[in-house]
Image (cartoon, rainbow, N blue to C red):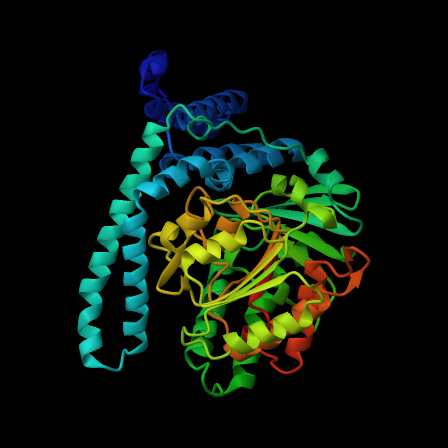
Length: 531
């Protein structure tokens, strides 16, 4: 405290980043010494300085990096609020919403500037798409020694191109500094406004990871609760990692019957039951028929649909959807547009990409959809695919997907002669009521310290898609074909102009029917609903 005193006297003269650190540290010192009102004041000053810094930084990615560096300020302020004698749900809800997915929100506002940067880097992107497709071919030929020798230099060239494209995007952002994208503010929606949008029987659970515990905010069915879960984050991470390690084993043996499948299922069910006991059972949601989940941090990897309870799975009794933020539920797109203003249905797949069941999947989905306005694209280029997506009502993409945790903006879906990158998706404004990504890892997301939510699925959501179905892991081709056929048959049940079964209900039915033939969650549980 004595060391901080002279710094606090001059704090307003310091650069913004240093002001954040000083107010943050001094708030923690006051908290430790039991001066809670002073601690709250100082932590709030740190947050105001952080928000001031964000407004001054041009570009989504630079703002995300700056926010990530100081994200702990929000976590410590939330922790302070939890230690109150009577924690306020509304205050904690507002803090949690402010602390999450800020880059995701920003990406929904910056399409114009990114589109201008795309024109400057068009040739580089075309070259990059060609190179990543070549890399995929070499990886499929991994048994050939000459192919293995070509991979390292090709990776280096790809990384170099990605850096040049990213630099071009940053230059355009700086030139557009006066645009709305470069001056982003944020006011979180209130819990009352969110609760009004919940359906009968629906409960919203918003999770937040603190350093030593997991927080759950429960809203709906006439109540609101702040729940600190008893299981520590480390135990939850261990269960998630064990489960996903088994999925990788099954993915590697997808072309043959996996050995010891009954044993693997029992092991997976044990981890899924452990996750349920840690994350859901303490919330006492017995009356909920619909569950809207907002994950945070490592919880983005939790397959909530597959969580095991009382001898069954959570999806047996509950319709589940995810949302990136609570205020995402306020989007107007949640209400279907009148039939006269809707676009058609787009079905697209890479039948030449080495995925044996893509053609059969497209045929099955087309047969299941009772709609005359259906466009089927086989082996489209990235440009053809993007153009077709612009006005589509439903979009189904069946292809090879790659999630890049090391560089999420270059996560991709394979196309003819190249790839559709996350940065390409973010430059569009979509009108789709539903996007289905039938691809491996299409729903994986990079959260980071600031929970910025970078991934192909969240790219489509940021670009305007109302609802989206995507996979959480590498999928099994044949089981996915069956799952998609069941899903679209359920979705296409109509009653006049209205969809008879909502995507969440269709997902439940598809998972149940697929499980009859493929009982391990690896086969039937990969897909989840966002939005």
